[in-house]
Image 1 (spheres, helix red, strand yellow):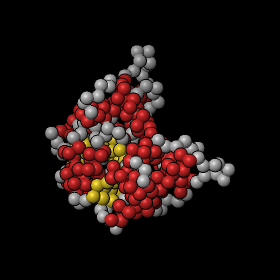
Image 2 (cartoon, rainbow over the protein chains, first blue to last red; image 1 turned 90 degrees about the vertical axis):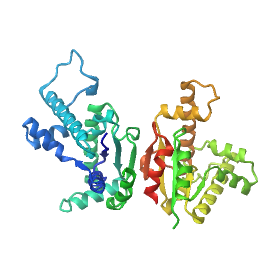
Image 3 (cartoon, rainbow over the protein chains, first blue to last red; image 1 turned 90 degrees about the horizontal axis):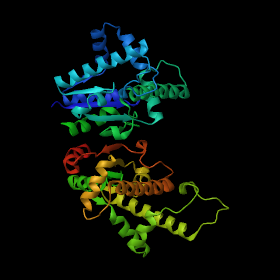
Image 4 (cartoon, rainbow over the protein chains, first blue to last red; image 1 turned 120 degrees about the vertical axis):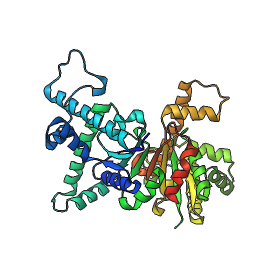
Length: 199
Length: 199
């Protein structure tokens, strides 16, 4: 069985950086945006389109994993979102079979649940998340309040997406093995010690 | 500055065992019930009485850390609970000054906040918590439902106590650096790897 580490993360928490550095430190594969590229390749849809579909959960009154009512007709946008999700699940399962890896986001913790991956969740307080966003895009001229709102909106969208496909509450610590608080933390400083846990 | 690890934990999650083993692995002091004994010694109250006071948060409409209203007369039980809490805070601060240590429960994460301890929270799903309780007290004849209720009641009491004295929500992951899920986990198997993070 390969060593699989999945990472859920709040926007601005540095979860992606943590995942990338952890994979580097452990010398294992790292998958993040590669999954979008692969879906795009397999479905012949553009990466932008796949990304947009993934970022906008279709409105649906039941968690998708429960199935649909006999009486509820599917709509084409929902059908496409579901087929992209299925493609994503297939790709993630293939990645997990290939080698040890770190997979960021994309419900990988749920998709791979039968393989018992090690599930990390990365979070931070709003002040730290705002500071990280400013560091990444210093040219953008948002007030702290605007940035906080944007961060909240993105996480709300992630939560909806995750909950639609898994039926689980996004960020609920019971769905993770380790939750790591990166408030006022320099990611590169904690990764070597964290990697020892997996080595 | 000494290395201080504080541990908050759900009842039945194995948090105390994790703390004890972690301290052993790191070769540092471990404080848990010793705090009660020390309060008892300093206040000349029996350990049982101190424990009972600590387990039963006095009814008070404001978080204690905010202070009391000029118009609200203190009652003797509340006064005593508060003085025991203050004694506890003093003892925990002394312990943190003495040497590296692991401190389980007792709002140590909050009491030592200015020293920036490493704050762990240990939790698990109800099934695992019930299984751990059965292992500890196999002679007790409770149904799963009764045990679950007892576990919930103890945690509700811990939450009330913590919230009264700190004004923070008990178990909120933002108040911890690491949250560790011990569902279906043998504590002694994860501690050596976890200790490497602190070594």
